[in-house]
Image (cartoon, rainbow, N blue to C red):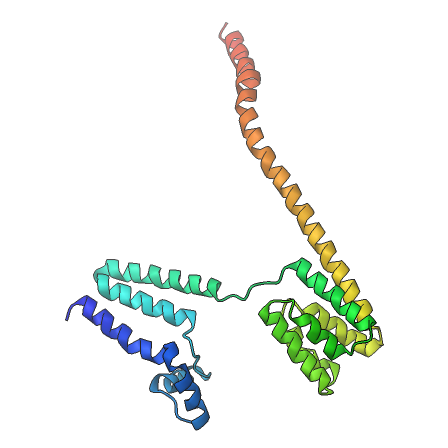
Length: 244
């Protein structure tokens, strides 16, 4: 059996354990207590539930093994390691959730303040503005709103929102507001102002950095002229005097 056949056999053996076509069967297995062999092995080795999609490090390892087997030899091992790292890095970056636009977040907090000042309950107002944020932040706010509607205490209710970077500031402020009695509408308006101030500061810092980077090429252009017209004649005159 040649290297290509071995690689295809390994890939064919690994795909059924993680293919999307087997996701409903795996979920049904979780409910019935019956799992595929690969899922049970993964759970025993890591102590965690098997995912419906493979983690990036597993896909990178699979790609590296297939590349090493296909190429063969020391060169195949090096190429496999490079491919494994490249696939792992690319998939990790691709799976990162998108961050919310700061101005969109500020507008959402302004809208939340307006809803609360209009008399809406906190769970209703939070649910109303959740759709303007990215999926992760929206899901966190909706979970917190559901907990608030069920009557959970603020520390517990704002835990989902506190776990999301885009909504963590609101969650921390809402917990403090619940303890001190500060209106949440005022807190949301202050958060919106802070976000806009941070955006303005970041834009100013980028502009200053750009001005410094722009002057660097000009300095590189004028430096040779300064050396040729200012320093070289002086050195040449001193050398002539010393030689005389």
